[in-house]
Image (cartoon, rainbow, N blue to C red; front, side, top):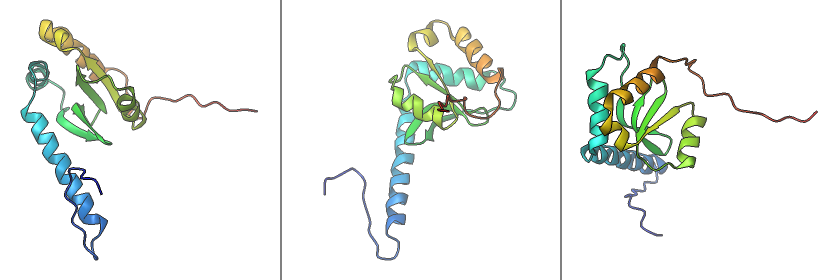
Length: 142
């Protein structure tokens, strides 16, 4: 069996429970490592989120959504903010299927004009949001 980077502790009684626990511990540790290695643009957005009034809303850093870690996430508004990340359509699609809105900013834009970045984040936070995923198109045949 190839080494996947996770330590698997098998137990006749616990079985998969210990494997899931080890995987969860690895994800938590990965999120901690990513928080420590933040780039300048991510730091600038974090400072914007900490210094501007959000009306009681809070953001989390490196928040798990499905198999991915969102750079910044507002759970109450189901809003993800990404900075120059991989524009992976599969990642965005999965987050949107789970009911999250994804906003992407380039590092250059964040560092060149942080106030414009803040205005866009504020618009997304205070704009129309009904708490449900975006409607999907369903094709039916009659």
